[in-house]
Amino acid sequence: MIIREEGNADKASLRSGLNSQAKQERIIRSMDKIPLRSPFKKTDGFVYFARMLDKIRAHGKSALPPDYQPNLGKGFDQLCVAFLRVDYNQLVDRVKQGGTDEEILHWCSSVGRQPSEDEVYVWNEFMRKRGWNDEVSETLKRRKKEAGMAGRSEIETMFAFIDADEGRSPVTSHEDRQLL
Image (cartoon, rainbow, N blue to C red; front, side, top):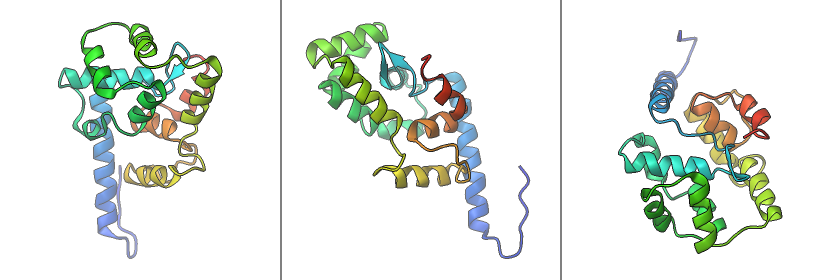
C-alpha cells in the first residue's frame, strides 16, 4: 500500500488507515489458522449457527483471535440463542461435550424449541439482511470505515462485511449462499 500526503491530508486518518489494514491482515492471518465459517453457511437450513459454534470451539481451545472474544454470546450470537430459546452458557457447555453441528442444533431443538420451516426462512432472511437499511446500518457504516472499507459499496449487510473482513469475497458469499 502506498500512502502519500496530499494537500492538507489528516495524518491521523492516514495512521488509522494503516491500523485498519494491519488489523485486517492480522485477522485474515488468524482466520488461516482458525477458520470461522461464513455467516451464510447453513446448518440444516439455518444460517449463522455453524459460525457461532466455530467461535465457541475456537474459544474453548484458546485459539479465538482476541478481537472476537468481547462479542462472544452477544450480537448475532445472542440473537441466535434467543431465537432457539436456549441459554448461551448451556450451549457452550454442550459444545464442549463434542458433536457435529447438526447434533448440537438438534440438542438446541430439544431443550429450546424447534422452529418451523417458515420461521427458519424468516430468520435466515432477517439475519442475512442485517445492516441493510435498518437499525444496524450505522454500525455497519462505522465498522466498514474502521476496517478501511468505507468505499466498498458491494458490502451492504453485516454478513457481507464479516466475509470481506475475514478475506472472503462478499459477492461470492452472497451468490453462493444458496449452496451453503
